[in-house]
Each structure stands twice: as structure tokens, then as C-alpha cells.
Image 1 (cartoon, rainbow, N blue to C red):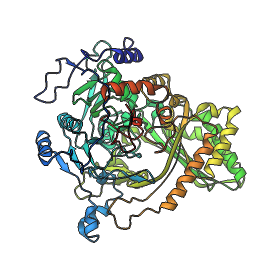
Image 2 (image 1 turned 90 degrees about the horizontal axis):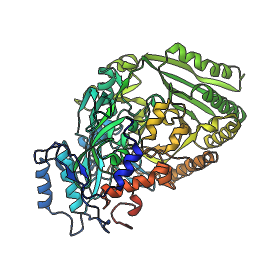
Image 3 (image 1 turned 180 degrees about the horizontal axis):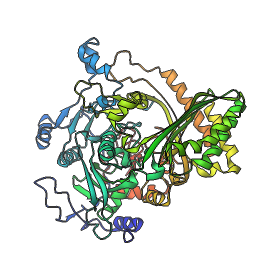
Image 4 (image 1 turned 45 degrees about the vertical axis):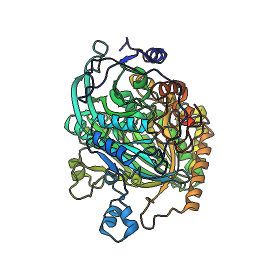
Length: 622
């Protein structure tokens, strides 16, 4: 699309006087004007000093106010209560037992407006129900909720999948816009975004409602449609949140980020207007939601993403190796890094390799575009070198290299039949058979986080001149806590078209030169309020948090100013605007001031959040 230069369009859009700036509206409600009718963006005014109201305040909406909102949203206003409230009254009650039985089921957690997929973070946040929730089913429901919260100075929260580690889809004393019911998946053979005819060629795409999760999208696009859409590796993550935060999937080195696949989105902004945004209409806002963080610029109600030709095969390489001594483990790390530089820095490879305090190296890699024989040939040199290490390194889990048709990779019926331990099912009575998730993700359901650190590691550290320093840093860090390298979350080695597309997003440019995202994290079982015996061992959690922090500091010796992925990072991230968005943050701030001058949309460490107190109730500066 040569005639649409992103930065030129964004700068022009920011610089144009707001009065008279024309946009098209979505024709999704009978009372709206047709989509072709121009609507001026309201003139910007200086942000107001604001204190949001709580239920105990005299300005809290009256029962009549809430009844009026309920009527406007077709009865879809809910008073929110936790399913574990039953446990407070009677721990042996059937309702309490049923809720406790589902605590490791991400579908149960996602379908409860009071709950979140993570239950909290030590000394940071705990999962707390909103007072009310609008269970939105159409964009007008969202628009009415936005206007209600804006006019009555309410703390507003947006939740789809509810997978935020940092608690951004959760806040007590708030009104929740719950997009879980905004479903729908539509495939296109030839899609052109609004007003982009002549600038963009028609291309295959999929439009997805904001409440969809990736497992169901993969089922429609890949299992049934025979194509690929770039989504998340965790099957129960919400589509809208992942795209807005950048979004990495198993094969990002081949297909790029989810944000870079976004062709068009529908979003409700703080003025209550429903907008269609793309590279031509509101290009600055379109750019900002491609990696600028969920919940900061508006409420996304649907997304249209390009789809890609499906490779013939996808596969897995797994093995566990254990070193007999610290010196042998250091050699093992160095040998693996050398192998990575030679063989894994390309479009075929993704997923993880972990290094652990017990001197084990755990390989759990995925590949695409290769068959089993080709993958085996690539890894043979590394496994041969390990076999030749005498007794200093041994295989505690022998290598397994498998490949299947890519069309079956997210096919529940195929996986359940051929690899029944790889997936788990939604165990609620009457749950659809399509409700499955990867067994390895069960630990995330309800987890209470102790610490979570991430950093993009530059590919330059794999050069022979720098590799010894990286080896030492990984050795030191992994002696304190598990360190996992996510190869699909760094784009070094990706094709030029993938890198160019990622440059057109708001994600920190550090990702372009990173060979992997290093993650160091730890968690414990869920302690949702009301659960029997759910108290957190605070001293133990804090000790774990300190070890995770120290391990991250050991690794940062070689990458002291490395960026961090906004969706997978520390709640206490230092210098977060630079870490999450780098040089893009000033432009994101301009977009925020343009479309949300009063800061209606607040999330922890989101764009503009430094103007508010920690809970998002009191504006500290303007």
C-alpha cells in the first residue's frame, strides 16, 4: 500500500485540528446515522481534574440511574457476585463444591464476570468483582456503558478473556464492560478495509468478535478453513486483548505479530462513538491499538485480521538434558546458544527452551514448514554433541521429534483421539466439545503470581564475541530461578515482510532485533476471596518474588536496557513507557490525549496512567 505511509498519516491525523475532523460511523444501531454520514470529532479541551466515585459516595448513581442503563442495554446489566460467595456462607454447599471443582478450568473462569484468569499478584492486586457489569452483545451496549461511566465519573473496566497478569481487567468499585458474549467469526476470500479500495488489494481475512478466544478462531480458520491466522499460543486468551498488546503466537517468526495482521477494527471511544478504524480512517487510533495496550484507547468490539496460507506440516521437538556439574551446565548452555545462532534463527522455529536451577535444559520447541525428517536433520548435530559429552550431560527425557498436518494442530477431535494427554476439556455439564485447551496451560488457570519478569534479548548476543557473556548471564540467572527463552516472541531471523509489518505497529522496536523473549516467573494456587483455605503464604511468596527479581537482574547484565513485552512483564516494571513502547510512547500519548482527553480508560502502566493514582480513581496531574 505504497500510497499509505503510516507515520505520515499518523502525524497528519494528530496535527489536524479536531474541530471539523470527519469520520465514518458504524451502522450498527437504528438510532445512528448511516455509515456514510460524516461525524466531527469533538473539539479537544484540557483534561479535567477528576475524582471518580465509589458506591459509598453521595454521587454514586441511584437505583433509578442503573435501571435506566439496564433498559438502554436491553436488560444486559448484571449485579456482579463471585461464585465463591457461596463458600463463605456454607463451604460444604453444592454451589461451593461445584465452583471449587472448576477452579482449574479456564472456560469456567472466563464465563464468570466476577473472576479473572489470574487471581492476583503478591503486594500488587487481587481479583475483585466489579459492582455492575454490562454483558455486551452489540456495540451499542458498549457505547451506552461508556457514556454512562463518563457522565457519572465511574471507574470503568473492560474484560474479554480476562487473562491480564497485571490485573487490568479487574477493579473493585467499578463498572465492567464484559465483552465475552460478543461472539462471531466470519471468513472472507477477498476483504478490503473501509475506504481503502484502490490502496489495498483484496485479501483473505477473518472478522472476529471481541469476546472470541483463539481456540475457537483456530478451529474456524485452520481446522475448517484450511488457513492460518496469527493468534496466541494459549488457546483461551481473548482475541481483542492479545491483538491490542501486540500478540505472539507459536509461529511469529513466520507470520509476525497478531497486531501486524490487523486490517481493521471496530472500537467505541470515550465520546461514545462507534468507529471503524483502519489505515485510512482514523489511522492514528488504528496504529495505537496495534500493540499500544488493551483498555487504554477505547473498547474494541470486533477485529478483522489477515489470514495466511497454511504450511503443510507443524511439529514439536522435545527433550530434557541434565548436566552433572556447574561447569558442564555452562558448556551445555553455550553449546545450545551456538546451535541456536546457526539453526534456529529463522522463520521455522518457535516456543521455548528452559534453563533450571537443577542444571537441566528443557527443550519444547515447535516448527512449521518442515517435515519430520528435515527437523530431525537440523537437530541431529546438537543431540550428537550432547551424546559425545561422556557422563557430564545425560538425557533424562530422550528427544522426540513429531510432525502432523498443520490442519490438525488445533483440531480437538484429532488431538483428543491421537494425543489425549495434550489437551484438556471444559468439564462443566453440557459444555461444547470444542471447549478444549492445552494441558500445559492448566497452571495458568487461577494462578496467583509471585513475580514475572521479561526482556527481549538482542540477537547480537549470539555472536561469538558476545556469546560467552550471554552464557554466563543465563548460567547465573538460572542458578536462582527457571529462565525460559521464548523464541517465537522475538522476530530476529524473520522474513523482511514480517519485520516491515511489525514496524508498522506500536510494539517496542526492540522486538525486531531480539532472538527471544526471556521470561522468569513464578506463581502459586488460586486464593479467590471466599475460597476455603485460600490464604496466601505471604512470606514465602515474597521470598520467591525476590529470587525472581535477582535472577532477572543477573540476566539484565548483558541487556541492561532491554524492552519488555507489555502483556508478560512485571507489575513493578521500571521505566515502563520506554520498556513497553520505546520511541513510540510520545506518539501513543498524543493519540491518548486526542481520543480520551479525560482519561476515562485507565489500566495499570497503560498509556497515560501516570496521571492517575494506583487504583485509577484520583487524577494526580493533567
